[in-house]
Image 1 (cartoon, rainbow, N blue to C red):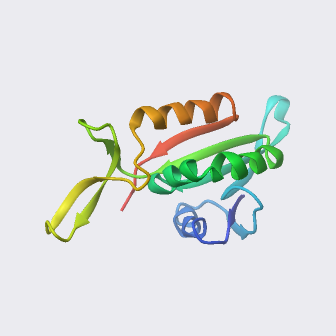
Image 2: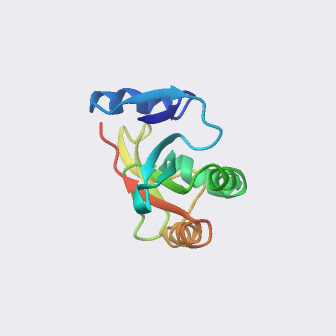
Length: 147
């Protein structure tokens, strides 16, 4: 059973998970967006927590300090294993190194790759992720947007 926080940002995960046949229960989670009980060494139960963020939200949470200063601390207390799932189609600008997403630009009447608010370079994002993983105990994975 997956427990999914019913609030904004998490509740959008319920329908796609249920459509895959995964048992889902909407609930209130103090920290994280999804949780479940996994099996550890000798089949011992372990609590797994997942924080779900889209790429722009991830960068903003790093800039504001909310991810490290609040969410990570709470997740480390609540779960045996913490994961960060970052969703989005992005790339680093080859000239500036800034993380960009493709967005419609009305003035140009087409989609362009534009920097994500927060102006984070790829090298900085990689350093932040390494710190989260090695010092914070939060494993991170990326997934693309499936539209």
